[in-house]
Amino acid sequence: MTDETITIPSDNGETTAYVARPESPNGKAVIIIQEYWGLNDHIRDITRRYAKEGFFAAAPDLYRGKTAATPAEAAQLMSELPLDDGIATIRATVNELQRTTGVDHFGITGFCMGGTYALRAACLVEGISAAVPFYGDIPEEDVLKQLRVPTIFISATKDGWINAEKVASLEDAAERYELPVESVKYEADHAFFNDTRPDVYVADAAKDAWALAVGFFENKL
Image (tube, rainbow, N blue to C red; front, top):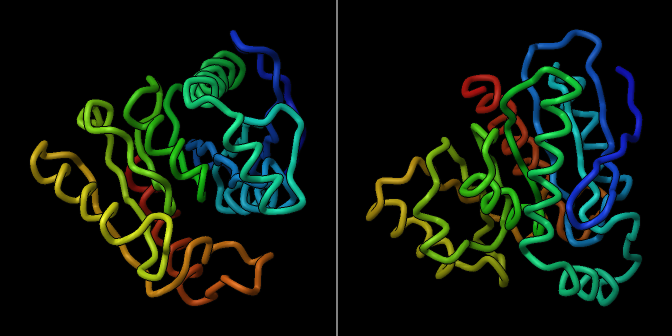
């Protein structure tokens, strides 16, 4: 596996993406969207894990170089990022990777804030063909009903942010609009996949969700 940081030109200013290339490529590619902490070591580790599974993997930096050390800093960075800017960065990443790698379609996943952007991008960005958002917020219905790509939405039953009511609203919209969404719930709290946070990490749930995501992308991409 090799890794590097590449430049992503976008309408709202240049940013970068962390890229990991597999030793034995499976011909498929996944974009990973950061938590509200930013593009930190944990997100780079997830990117490398996808590469070790055979995927070309890329994590665009939605904060353009900024990372947070405290929840308050992370919340501020997230609140300062307009939704449209985050989506524009994801769209620019897809376009740049299509241009430079020859890959024409991508899976997308993300965690916490990144789950919000992953699901929204799956509704709005050409070139995304499968999505696995983890415990992200649900787009407004006018956006959500545009979803056409197979999606697994992963949530946590003890999550106070992406709570049961929000997950139920997604499931209701999926039924009414016949959206290609499977809802998967784990008995855990928000951010249970983050193995750098022992206060919330749940190893069994994280292991199962990882296998689910990898298998889904292998099947759908």
